[in-house]
Length: 473
Image (cartoon, rainbow, N blue to C red; front, side, top):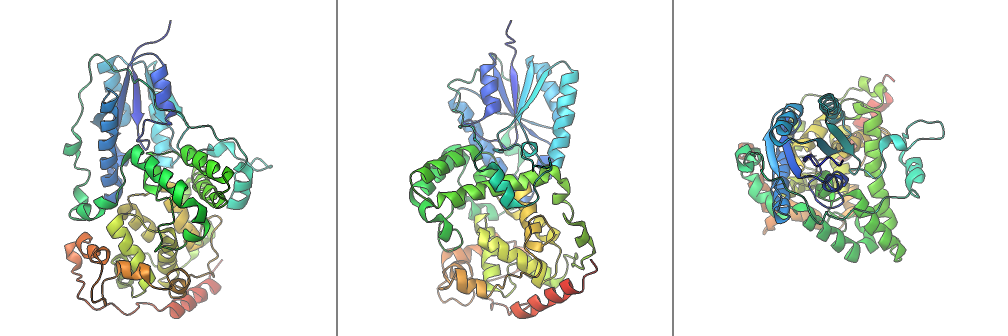
């Protein structure tokens, strides 16, 4: 006989109803489905902007369930303890969830799965956050890939499952378990006045994510290869915040990109390659969890990076007052919008790690606090790539010149003028918003003079090269 006891669907970074294998399986199982989100220690460890964005996403997910005659139950505490309590309250016979790949989540999930199975429950995780499970992509020698290009070649012709439709019906229990109130969690408390500045730039939920994808494919993907490098142009998909929280899936993005490619939009190939770069980051994170916590190339442990965040250079960098316009503009974009253009990320990271000779962990942890599209794999991979200490990294002797990068990618200074108010007679609202978003304790005003470079482009490059040439490895 079919088991019609309730299924608990444990949400994490999968804030959607469509293309959701765990939800689909729970709905097909036959009994009621009880969606739950658990505020555990991993949620409490999130940075200020990511946890604020999570709270907004949970609000929209709850509304989506309500439209289907269902509910999102909120509980706080250790996941195994919370789930066992819910099983006791509801008589559930199974717990389903979508798989995660960072070391902390893997450890948590293995502990939960083992405990639930010991209780005689069905405990099952599902793929869906990635197109290619990290252990499913191997070299001919049976090893994991350490370089992107051969990884791309290995997966580019693989079949990617078609996205799954939203269940037509999500069976509800006769009696719902109690739920915490989302407002009482105060997930956005740390944002303070910055929340009002960033909020207009946020696109919440799967409907908004699908609209973003549709607009990108219809009007921007045809010129993506060139425009994605120009920060003043809206030439990218802007889907990073939605992918980070699973409001849209890579499968859905891949399907749309393939349709565009088959329709003759050749630049869609570059978009598909960027989706696979995300897969590559998770591939590496799974196989080498130290990507998040230490130098991927251990020989870089001996490199003389500064690790003191109290140094004036680090403070100036964090406050977007380095005197390097491209660096400062990109950082200010992050404070106002919660995101940063990818070209800006490379320049910002290179300047911190190479011109200022600071450890990449300083930047990685700062982005963890400030980005609404924070992603554990992409953030760690990006910083180690920029520093030269990671897999498939840019060589240390390749130093982005923040002045010549302006001439290449922002020749008319549109991007810089959009975000830096100092020196402009009539600065735009975007530039002024920076002063509303930042902490009052920084005591920075648009009337201040724009600073001279704390480290010049040529000076910083030479210092980095000298340190590289004199390294002990």
